[in-house]
Length: 196
Image 1 (cartoon, rainbow, N blue to C red):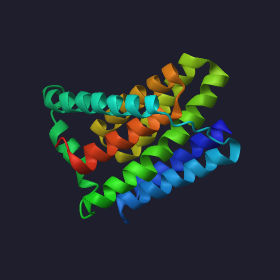
Image 2 (cartoon, rainbow, N blue to C red; image 1 turned 90 degrees about the vertical axis):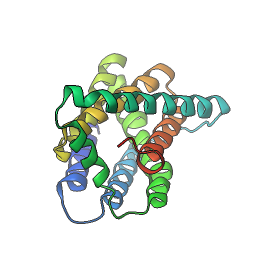
Image 3 (cartoon, rainbow, N blue to C red; image 1 turned 30 degrees about the vertical axis):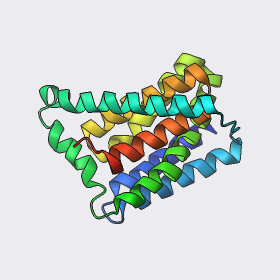
Image 4 (tube, rainbow, N blue to C red; image 1 turned 120 degrees about the vertical axis):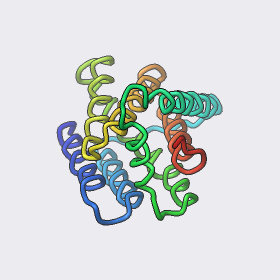
């Protein structure tokens, strides 16, 4: 179950980032749909949306946006090619309507990634290896599949964001919280207020 999930994400992220043809946002949406459906074969997520989860999700999305905003300011002092690599991340969306990107990130990619990465993979890794080890492994796998982008800044961004959402999930075990956080953060940082 876990090894199959990891293999599937490797294949999906290699397809999304490794193949030059096709629209990136369509490919990532398809990849997230595939891994999400895989997780549904093994377990059904339990949703219990409540006001607290939504508010904490919004607050955490704002905090993570602030972390990335600060990181974007500091990165050029640590990585000489940071500016061009961050620009390369945004170039993935070239030619796609921002409103469509917003809808995709907010309602498909963000929720779907959290259902799989935290609600399924991290949850099962924590059950198998213990909470902190499962959290660490889940975070490393999440960052690791982004290696197919061949973009150091994107891999580091995935590591930071994965650790952030994984830490929230470890703390609260609240899937709705991380779904709201991931959906709003990604939609705003890519489609509403890009940092580059």
